[in-house]
Every structure is written in structure tokens, then in C-alpha cells.
Length: 193
Length: 252
Image 1 (cartoon, each protein chain N blue to C red):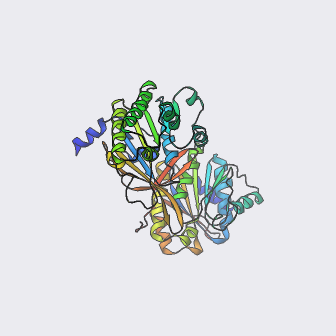
Image 2: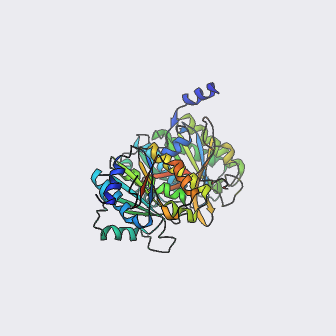
Image 3: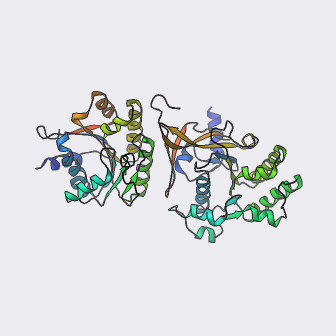
């Protein structure tokens, strides 16, 4: 069983409306994305709303294409392209937030995509808390995570909050643990636990 | 407190159809209230007001937009992008768009300033339209533009009072759109509008660390409890969406 498959089977055990901390080793980022988008979401016919604050939507779309992962059910909220002065033409699969400091707009764009989605099951992937922490204070980020995860939970939506293990401080861990029900840790030597 | 809550529950609500706003208002605007929808340019007042009417029209309540500054054709450009807009609403007379300058012309009100008699005539003409078309939701966009034609506070007060009373007696819930300049102290240009309205919804542009956020706050609403917090809004094809403004332990 590949690492991605193992992570996907962990995701299968997620209860409905759960918020899960997805802690990923820096070398296993792509395995985690494959696990969420390719194996878990595709198998269960889940609409994925991928909030990206780490790399641009275009870069992720290119990666998914290179990995031959079907991304037709993935909708993106891109919080980074605009502030990098990159392309921010609104398209069918992506909505742009002007800056990763506009946390309210992340919630608003996610809300809009949830309303548009006709899928029975929806999943929001927040990639990543580490990147958002570069642009926001711990106080405001904690408040954001609390409101965001609680609001998604109340609507029956599953949330995955991604952190990169090597870049995570104890404060960030506490922040994520506060709003999450469980943890999936992705590192080769440990496997998911 | 229990008695007050019971009374609030008894008062019939006019649901705006904007879910988050109805939650902020604990169910909607108390029916037949006149609300001042105020804010500076580019804050989304007209879009919110149009959505309020659209939801009413969809629910079968004849809804009228009285436009002072923009022609109906231009307004349609704002309405069409909504996912829930159907031109049938206009064809069936559920959504009615009226250009006030045409009404001025029909009534022979050609002078730059209306007399007291003309104020009375204008109000009764609007109320006649409301009665004839059984209008249950009315938006006047904007009361500020009408105010410039009335000039004096006395005439503006008279216009709003007569209009609000007449609309209330017909069970019509109304929004008067008010334009204020950025950084303005009050909620209206002529200062009388805010005192006469049953409710005030303030829309704004808030700058935070170089980001410009559209905000909404309910300042007052007679006949109901409501949240007084500030919310951030987005104008989308699915309508107005609102989320709480993050304070982060500080905030402005």
C-alpha cells in the first residue's frame, strides 16, 4: 500500500462534519495531495474546495495534471497569486482572494463555492496554516480557524487543515489542535497514525 | 425580557432573503418598517437593495425599485448576473422598475426645487403606485438625490414622514438608500433621514493594512433585537454573502 493510499484510508474514517489536522512532512506534500484529491475525493464523489495560500492555483493545477489526477471536482480559492502579481483572471475552477491577510474573504469565497456545489459530500482543504501564519498574527489566525471550522462543521462539511511539520511551531500546533477533532500525520518513517 | 422576546416573535417579518442578514435581524425586517440603507459609494447598497426586491418578487410579493439617478436599463445590468433572477419576474409584474425622473415629468415637476405642495403630490403619486400594484417591498434609490430636489430639511422631513406612514399603512416594507461621504459622522446627508427611519443598515469600505473590505452593520432596527456587530460582505452571483469581521484581539 502506498503512503497516499494509507492516508486516504485514514480519511475514510473521518466522521461527518469533522475538522481534521493533516500534518505533512515536507517531502510528502504531494502524497498528501494525491491522497485527498485523487484517492479519497474521487472514490467518494466528493467536491473539494482547495484553499491555497502556499503555491498558486496554476502551480497546483499543473502538478495535478502532471500526476494525471482528475481535478474536475476540485474548486480553488487562491489567496496567493494576486499578491504575487501573478495571473488572477477568474475562471471556472478558481476564485481569487487579493491577499492572504483577507481571511474573511477566504470564508466568503469558500461559502460561495459551497453554495454552488451540488455534491452531497463536500470537503474543504486549507493549505496551509503555515503559509497563512506568515501573513497574519496568531490571534487573528486562531479566530479565523475557529470561525471557519465551526461554520463548516455546522453545515456538515468536512475540513482538512494542512500544516507542514518541519515549519510548524508549538503555537501553530496548539491553534490547529484547538479546532480539530483528530490528527493525520504523514511522514514516511512513521506512516499515518 | 421573556415578554419582550414574545412580542418580537409576534411581529411579522419581511425576510430579506439574504440568509446572513436575516440571521443578523433574528428573522428579517419587521414588516412595514422603513429602513435607511446608508453608506458611501461602492459599498454595495444598490446590489443589496435589488436582492431584497428580487427575493420578495420570487416569493410572490410585488416589489418596486424607484430609481432616481440610474435608468432602468442600466439597473437591469446589475440584476441579471444573479443566479436566481428570471426575466419572468418583470414580465409578471412582480419586479417593477420605475424611473423617478419620468414620474417628475408626468407630474409636471420641472423646477429645480419642489414646493411643499409638490412634495405632497409626489408622495401621494408614489403611494398610489404602491396601492395599485399591491407593492409589498419598495426601494427608493436614493433618498439623497430626492433630498437635493427638496432642498430644505423641513420638506425632506415631510416627504419621508408622509411616505413612511403611507407605506406602513399599506404593509409595505421599504428601503431608502442614502449616500454619505467616506468618513461622514452621521448616517445621512441631511441628518433628518436617520432620525425618521425605523432602522439603519450601514454599509462601508473598511481599510485594514492596505486591504479594502466591504462591511455591513445594523445600527438600529425598531421592533426587533439584532446583532450590532460588523460583518464583511461579498457581492456574488449567489447574492450578498456575509461573515463576521475578524477582530484578532484588537480590530477597529
